Image (cartoon, rainbow, N blue to C red; front, side):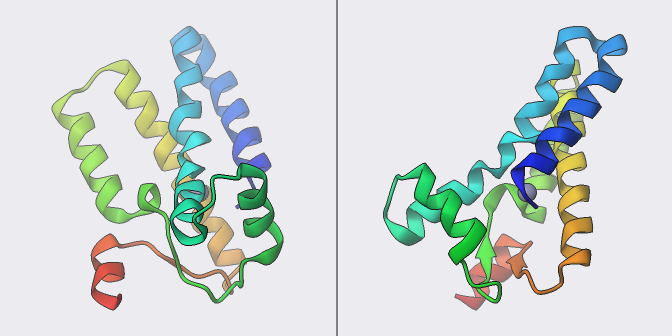
Length: 131
Ligand SMILES: [Zn+2]
């Protein structure tokens, strides 16, 4: 999903949460928006380049849709570990981060349903077994 859609959804979610949580609602950005940093990490590993501009251009225009990607923060293993972390250490910030993560992943799943041509491994274990 394009970053602008995550940005807009995070703003809306932060506005909705603001009356309940105040400035803590801004933490929704950490996992709601910045979780896509794993695309940049994947680009650095694949292309051996730190250029953020080239990475953005690669994902927007150059990456072949059939190319299977692994984005570590989008895997079921990361999500389960994070949810266990939230259960073990329940506090408002962790819960807000969890809300941001789940919102982000739901939007990505909807995006993927609408764009079936985009390939991504949602399991780190499955990815490692394949490669
Ligand atoms: Zn994403």
